Length: 414
Ligand code: C6P
Image 1 (cartoon, rainbow, N blue to C red):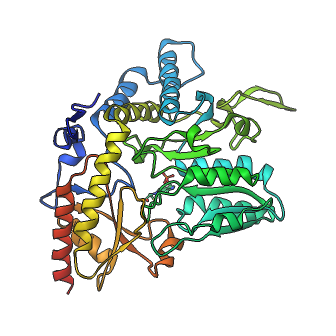
Image 2: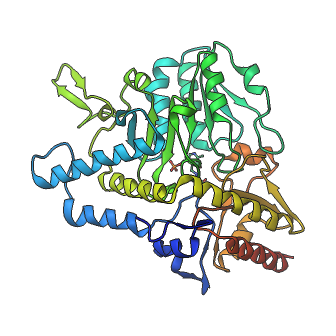
C-alpha cells in the first residue's frame, strides 16, 4: 500500500512522493524535477520491495518445479496476471499475455495475427501521430504480405481529422492500429469510437495504450478493442515487462510468435502441440520478477485510484500549459482539446538538445528529440522538440521550476 493515498481534495503528493526514492535526489546540486515519465516513470518502494522479496526469498523458475520456491514463484507470477486483468477489466486472465513491453506486444500482433490475416491488396490503418513501435511492425508486415499501410491524417492541433477514418475504412482494411494517447503530442484519441467503426467495417482494432494505462482508468471491454498494448516501466513497474491484452477468440486463432519451452504441451521431432492460452505466447523463462513487480505497481496505482490520478494530472496539464505558453517564443506542439500528461514545445532560437542540457543543469529532466514519432514531428515542421511529461507524483511547483528554467535557458542562449 502507498504510504498515503489521498487527502480530501485528492492525492496528497507531498506525502506520496516519499514512496519514490529516486525523486529525493539532487541533480547538479538542485532538487530533481522529473518531467520525463512518458519515457519511463519512477518506481515506488512498494514495487522495489516486491522485486527484492522475489530475489531474496522466492527466486526460482515458474511452471517447472514441484519444489516450494518454484510453487511460490509460479503463484506470484500467475496472480500478477490476475491483477493486470482486473486493472484492464479484461474478461479473463488468459487474455493477458506478458511481453517485454508495448513494442513487443505490437510486434506479437503484427507477426502472430498479421501474417495470417493480412494479404495482398489488404490495408492496415495507423494514425499520423503514432510512435515508431506502432508504425514499423506494420510497415514490415505490409511489405512482406503485399499489403498497403495507410495513414489517418491529423490536424494542426494534433487531433485525428474528423471523418477521415470513415472515408478510409473499406472491406480491404484488416486492422486499425492507433495510440490511445500520443507520446509526442499528448492527444487522447477516441478509441472506443475508432474500435466501433473498425468493427463495423469488418476490421480489428489495436490500441497502443503505452501512454494511457498509466494515466486513466482502462476498461478494454468497454473500449471494445481487440488488442491493447502497454509497458510496465511507464506505469511505475519494472523495466522489461509489459503486456498484450487480446480478446480470447482472436488470441486463440493466432499463430505463436516465438517458440521453445513453456509454450508447448507436447513435442516430438515430427510435431508440436501448443500450450493453452496465454502460455502459447510466452516462450521461454519469462520476466518473473518483473511480472511480480508489475503486480505491485498495479496495486499501487489502484490504491491511489485511477480517477484521482487522472483528476490530479488534468489540473497539472492545465497549469503547465498555461505556465509554458506564457513564455514569449515558446510554441506548444500538440494542442488537442483532449490531452493527457504531455506538454511538448519548441523554443524559438534554441536547439532542443541545447535546451535539454541547460534544463538538466538546473535539475530538470525532460526529453528532447523526435520522441520516436518522427512523422508526427515532421508534420509540425520539426526534427526535434522538448517534452515535459508528468505523472501523479508531479506538482504545480515542478512546472514553476520548468518555466523559470526555460527563461534562464533562453537568456543563456540569446
Ligand atoms: N515511448 C517515450 O519517451 P516500449 O519502449 O516498448 O516500452 O514502448 C514503446 C512505445 C509504444 N507506444 C507509445 C505510444 C510509446 O510512447 C512508447 C514508448 C517512450 O515516449 C520511449 S520512446
